[in-house]
Length: 88
Image (tube, rainbow, N blue to C red; front, side, top):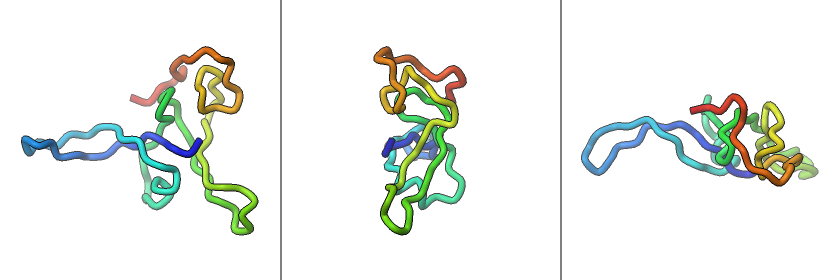
């Protein structure tokens, strides 16, 4: 998985501030101090991993709890469904 959902504050065109989800790359998420993250598809909790210094693995995100109903999970069973403990 190379994109994640992150919860951030936004200012609307009317000037009000809202707290909502945005999809960003794992590379950008790794730069943030303590982001609130979730899978951008199934809304399950994810963990970030940095690229190996030798280049053997790329930066990525993985589900904390496997979700066979998410097409971004390596064990996708072909039927999409939200995570059991979705982050809202």
